[in-house]
Amino acid sequence: MIKKIFFQSIFFSFLFFKEAFAAESGGMPQLNPEFWISQIFWLILTFGTMYVVLSKFILPKISNNLESRKSQILENIEAAEKQREDSEAKLKEYDEVILKSKSEAKTMFNQTREKALKDIIAKKEVLDQQIDDEINKAEKEIEVLRVSAPDKINKIAIETSSELLEKLIGSGVNSSSISAIVDDLSKRNGDKYYGN
Amino acid sequence: MAANPMSQFDVYRIGPEIKVGAFDISFTNASLFMIISTVSILLVFNLGSKRNSVLPNKMQLLAELSYTFVAKMISDTAGSKAKPYFAFIFSLFMFVLFCNMFGMIPYTFTVTSHIIVTFILASFIFIGVTIIGFIKHGFGYLKLFVPSGVPAVLLPLIVIIEIISYLSRPISLSVRLFANMMAGHTMMKVFGGFVISLGLVGGWLPLSFSVALTGLEILVAFLQAYVFAILTCIYLNDALNLHH
Image 1: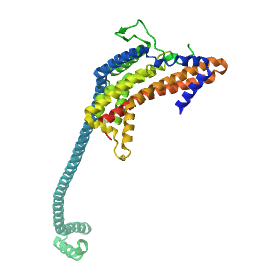
Image 2: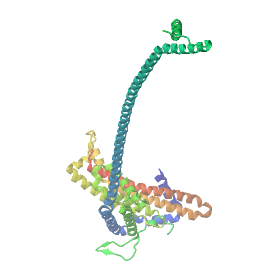
Image 3: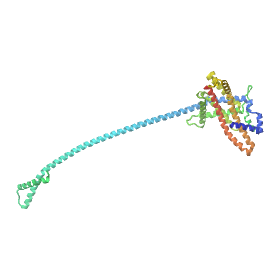
């Protein structure tokens, strides 16, 4: 369509311009065979030289460059992939180590706790034993004291009352009669004070 | 003379007349621009292939993009069998492209605007493709002219049409490029002439046309080089992978 308009406008320009008419009378230089052989010769020479140089030297180099770049990029991608895999494996290993050490720590903690608990229980038992022994001893002493206490009290009471009587009356009183009274009193009241 | 829109296509001798036997092979402006195009192509692609860095510089990028562009074009149209002809098609595309583009610079000569140049290129392609076809398929290559699935009644007619279309390939290929280049450059010259003759008052309209045409012609220069190369690929495809 555009070409058609071109050709039409060329045609009209030939109509409108005298110089253009003059040109047409000269014809197209393309159809003048004067330099055809020369053009063919130089075309074959230049194009042939260019073809030989391009195909032998330049194009193989370009294709080589492209190939080497491609392979280099592929290599880099492969290396990156390998490194990624490596790092993933390392990460896994690290996770495993962490997990293992965690469980180890847990068992160790548990063991230590059990041991400590056992120790504590053992010590507690020993202590309990000791405490029980002490308590028993003390109870025995108390028992002894309690058993011996009324006699001592009676004795003191006899001494005190004999002294009191001596002071009150001014002469010694038969201690056997006093002890008889005290014994009698303590027997009567002893249960009141000492239980049992 | 300057207003003649065809004078830009004149071929003239540069330097002395060189004759080999009866043939005149003098150095002309056409030869000059062929050499300029070739040298530029070699320079650009030599610079573009010199260093090989993973991150290419501009020249390298240009060379590699052109390489992959042409390689993709060939593999898309002619398949993987066309790989041995890559260098030729690449050279062809670049030669036509650079000749077209150098022609877009004012006061230069457009090599591809001459029918003889494009015809030699096209007939070389035609002959080469035909030879390749016969080497690859023997006389089976003649099956190209007998399309499958055609009624027997129509077959003689179809075969004649196919043969004519095959034989007209070099003409259509060469005339397409030549006519496009010549028409475009003539158009630009004509509009340039309008600018001068209409002067300061009315010259602005054809000037703006001229500017638009320059853009269009640059597009055409690329497109025609591409079409030339891709048609070569299609012809090569016919010869390499016989489909009919």
